[in-house]
Image (cartoon, rainbow, N blue to C red; front, side):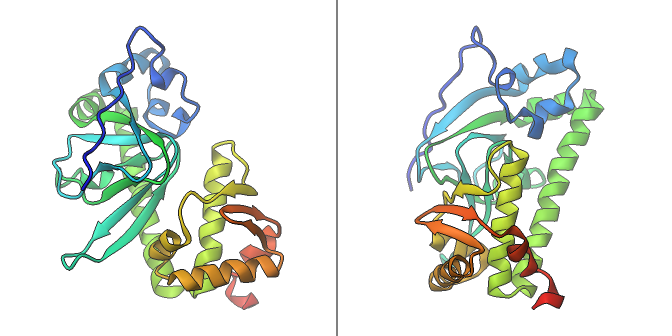
Length: 246
């Protein structure tokens, strides 16, 4: 198992990362009044650079920090006692990682960089101390945890109730909406995860994901060139999720 890379520390005489981050509207600073933004200097100290394939943290480690994706993307992986692994989430800029460990104070998943990425390191003790004094920050934390729970429930529904083509269509549309919310193109983007990783997340075999990608391409729903995806018929893709249309 590879060691976690050392953090790259931002000097405090330079602009604080939160001051220049266009993802702050998805993260913790959105909860702070303008005159309290200085609190982020106590809560968030470093921005860590994580090479592709390296772990940011791993299951069972004591949780004293949570992280926000500053740039790049990550995956969350759970491992069963017999060594089987499943991807349970992908994380794009502005999204928090490690929140599942708040109750047990240990990390519940391995989080691995899908590409050369950056993550903001947030001190849990400082975060909780500030949240006790700032109800808006406490509310934001609750919202983030609640959203994570809601996504986990939706994913469970997908795995238990949806057919293979529905799962992949939902995955592409969901990723599209997440990019759109961040001011990125919702119609054309690069899949940073492999087809095998998509299959692990959706509970599908690699061959099934590849076959469905080709089928969607041939049907004119998407255009695929290696990992570059362009959604060419959004309504047609969405119709796959409507039972009456099946």
